[in-house]
Structures are given as C-alpha cells and as structure tokens.
Image 1: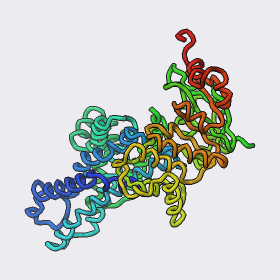
Image 2: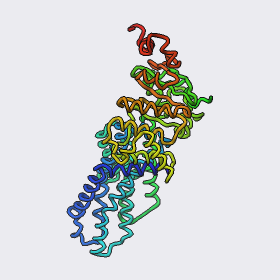
Image 3: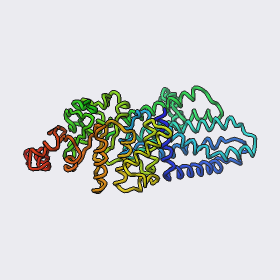
Image 4: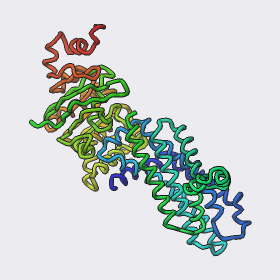
Length: 243
Length: 242
C-alpha cells in the first residue's frame, strides 16, 4: 500500500506540474456550473437541493474522465518510463493502484471545488445536506468507475486518441444501459437482456445516491466494478508492457 | 566468489523471431561485464529480462539468488537498472524524481534525503537539483537516470548504454564512477564503444542474433585479431557476407 501511495503521490504532483490539471478543473467547474444554472434551472426550480448538478456531473465525467485516463499508461509507454516504473521494486498491482488512486484523488479535488454550489444552496434555503453528501459520494464513485475503465483501456494501446474514444464508448455503454430507451427496447425484444442492462447500469445506481439513498448493494456494485477493471488493467499492463 | 547475477538458459521469442536464444552466463562481485553486439543482437532484450521488465519465453535469471520471474520484487530490490535511453519523468525536478525513487525503494525522512544527496553528488547533479528534467541537456538526463540506479547502492547494476550521448568528458566521468564502484558490485553495461570495454570491463561478452559468440577478457579478445574492432567484426558479421 505504501508503494502504491508513493506512486500515487508522484502521479498527482505530475498532474499539477502540467497544464492538464488546471484545464481539467477549470473546464469542469465552468461546465458543471453553467449547466446547473441554465439547463438545470437552478433558481427557477424553487427547491433547495443540487439535483440538477448531480444530474449533469456524470455526463461531464463521461467525457472528461477518459481525457484524464487516456494518457495514464499511453504516456508512460511513449516516454519509456513504463520500463523505469516496472523495474522499481513494486508489483504491477501497486503501480496500477497507485495510478488509479492519483487520478481518483484528482477527481475528488475537482468535485470538492464545486463547494460554492453547496454554500449557495445553504444560503438560499434549507437543503438536506445528507442528500447532498450522498450525491457527492455517488459522483465520486462514478468518477472512480469511469477512471477504472479508462485506465484499463489506456494500458491496451499506445495511441491516446484510441484510448480516449474507446473509453468514452465503453463508459457510455455502462451509463446508458439503464436508460428507458435501452431497457424498453430490450424488454420488448429480449426481456432477459433488459434485466441485465438495468443490473449493470451505472446511472441507475447513481440515481439512488442523488436521492440520498446509500445502500450496501450499490456500494458493492461500485466496488466490484472498479475492482474488476483494475484487475483487467493489471492484466493488460502485464501482457502489453514491453510491446 | 559468489555469482550475483546468474542467467540461466534465457530465451525470448517475439512471434517467430527469437531475439535471445538460450543465453547463459553469470557475473560475480567485482566483475564489470561489457555486453557487446550489433544493433538488434538481443543485448537490450537480455537486460530487460534481467531487470524483470520483459518476461522470458524460457529460462530465467537470478539476482543475488532471487529469481526475477518468481520473486520479482525481491530481485528488483537488489538491482539498479538504467533502461536504454535513460527515461525519466520530464516534468519532475531532479530532486523530485530522485526523491520519488528513494521513497519507492522504502527510504524515508533523513535517510531518503541523504541517499538523494549522495546520488546527486556521485553523478555531479548538485547544480541542477531544482530544474525540471525536461530542461536539461542529454548528458544531464542520462546522469539523472544513472543517479536513480545508484541511489540505493545495489549489489547489482545493469546499465544499458550508460555513456550513449555523453560528451568525452562526461563519458570519462561515468567510466570513473563505474570503476570506483566495481569492487563491491556486479556490473553489466552494454555499449557500442569497443574502447570503453577495454578501458573499464574485466570481461566481455559478444552477442549477435541472440546467441553468445564470445566470452573472454577484453585483452584475450583483442589478441584473437589485429584489433578488438576487427575481432568484433569478424565474430558478428554474417559469415556469407564477410
């Protein structure tokens, strides 16, 4: 764990040593704020909560998180530093975990910087802050899930564009699987798949969090989702490291 | 003398191409082994397998008795490795990068600081300690890579072309450093420069097309022909072309 944290610390410092961090955070804050106030009709709704915000954040993450992960392993390959990293006395699992934790911590920082929204809604009314906290937890878990997918895909290819496009596509698949369009279509044609699609859907789970419902089932879902993709990541790194 | 590096029938195949073909040798403490061969001979692949980066198709290697395939982390602890081209994280400062290497190797607090300071002193990096690595010249970058490999004072050093891209003075410095460390370590360096082998190596292995063609002291090798250059050419050129 210590080695993984050392790797994570270096990675996280790396984000802030390049413009990546600032561009990501600024775009995320501008977009999430703008969407919440315009399309989300934050003031007009007349309700003191952050429902519109929690509705938009996962869709923003769908595009922004793969932009973060596309370089995760691809960049190490391009620079040749993957050879350095994997010949240090750490296991591949520690390297994978370290990179993931750094990216996740970075997303947590970006999310934390949306705190003015929480202050605003508390000044304007009396929101249920427990629901808001659950919503943030859901967003963070969604970011973690997308990160795990993106990181695994980044380990498979040297090409960052391919890593980005594939990661968006796969994340979209999980995000949209539970949407009414998909499930209604499937339940008419192949009812078995409809259940499955709802079962693997990220957004359904997230909806529970946004309503303030924290259930063990959803936590287990996210933990196993992230765990599976991190495992896939370690396998991909092991298989393709020297290519 | 105990062999710190044991390479045991190491083989690597990429598809139908055999890059390293049943290579075995061992290196004892105090030896500086020059690993010679034309480009594509299998030098780097052998070193990458020794460092645990490339998984062998067959055979294995042991560093201080630790198997690089079965006990990779234990083997890597005993190893200082400079990959080909000395890759480093460009946005990090020299001190930041070496500090990372020290922490990954389990050094904390003042010990980490001392190790980093010592490694920078050995490779004369003190003057650039707070510069981002990407702003440094090629010679400095190579020395940063070298400092990283020396930091934990490992018993085994594997350096892939440590003097490539350095100017004559820097080459001299690196050679002096290797000579200084030689008595306490087992060192493998790969190089294209034959005079370097005569200058610092106690032993030379010539490899071509994945096979070991010669294993002798540089002096013995040069006695086989008019010069070391001629011997090298004679051994490594395909026979029908020669």
